[in-house]
Length: 500
Image: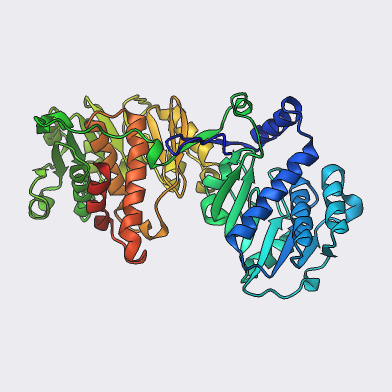
C-alpha cells in the first residue's frame, strides 16, 4: 500500500536522497526489517511491475552496478530466471568487488541460472518483446559518469527496446533532477520515498511513468523525516468556491495588466484575456496607445487604457486589487516607469517576463521585498534575478527558487517541466503540461490566470499552485489534436472549463 498517498486528494511528499536513506534506516531499525529483505521487496516490486507493463516479454537484460541499486537488479534477474524468462545480466562491477546485500543478491541470481556478461558486445540481440532494466546507479550518484557505466547508459539509450529504471534513471541527480548523460526510461519504479529529482529538471523527461512502492514502510516512519518539497495534482489543490446566485462582478476582483510595449501588444492582451477566462470580475489593460484599438476589437470586455508614461498610469492603479506587470513590457524607459509606479501601488502584484528582467537590473524597485507579490521566472530570468548562470539554476531549481524567495519575499513560481513554487511555508512542485507549450505567449497566460485567482480571494501560494495546474492541464487538453503548432490562445476556453 502507498502509505504516503492514501487518497488522490493528498499531496505527495518528495524526498532528498539523504532523507530516503534515513527512511531506509528507520524501516530497518524500528520495523526490524533486514536490509536484504528490503532489497528483495524492491526487486520483487520492480519485477512484478515489469511483467504487468510488458506481459508479452520474451527476454530481459539487466544492467547492474556495484551498489544496492545493482543488488535490486540482481534480484530482478533471479526472479526472471525462476519464471523461466531468458535473462542476461551486464555486470558493471566484478562479483569479487561486490559487498553485503548486493553480493547476496548476485548469488541469488547466479543460483537461479541467470546469464552474466561483462561486455556490451556479449549481450544478445533484442526484439520487440525484450525489456532492458537499468540498475546501474542509485541515489548516491554525483559527478561524472565513468566506464563502464557511461558506455552502458549510451547502449541503453540507443536500444529500441523499452527500459525500466530501478529507483531512478542512472545519471539523474536524485535531489535536483539535474542530468548531463542519463538513461531515458519508459518507466521508473522508485522505493521507500519519492525522489525529488524524478519530478524536477530533467527528471520528468527521463523517468517516464513513475511508480511508487513503499515496501511496507509504516506511516509513522514518514512522520519522522522531513520532505524536501510537496507535489500537488488537481485533486490535492484548493479550488475556488461556487458562486452564490446573487453574485456580482465586484466580488471577483479587478485585475489590471500592465505591458505591451511597441510590437508586444499581443502579450499583454493575452494575459488580460486569460484573467477574464479565469473568472476575474473586471479586467483593465494599461498599454501603448497604438494597441488599444486592437485590444478592444479582440476582447471588448477588457477596459483598455492608453498610457504613455508612469504618470498617466498612476490614477489607473487605484481601482484594481491585483496588478500584473510584465507581459510584453519590454525594457525601455517607458517600461521602467510603469513598473516603478505599479510596484509601489496597493494590492497584490504578479511580475513576469521583462518586469523580472528590469527588477534584476537593480535600477527599479531596488531592495524592495513584498509579501504580496508573485514572481514567475523561467530559468533564464531566475538566473538574472540571482546574478548566476542559467546552468546553476537548472542544476538545482529548488535551491534557486528558495534563494529568489529569500531575496525578494512573496511567492516564486520557477517555471519548468516540474514547476517549483517557493513561499514562506515551504516548497511545492506541479508536474503538468506538455512540450507543445514551448511556444510564445504561454507565460503571459499563466500571469493572467494567477492574477485572476488572487483577485477572487485565493492566497498567493494557493493561487500560484492552482494557476500552474490550470495552465498545464489546459495545455494538455488543447494538445489532444497534436502538440506541434499549439498556440497560447488555444488554451483559453480550456482554462475556462477547468477553473469552474
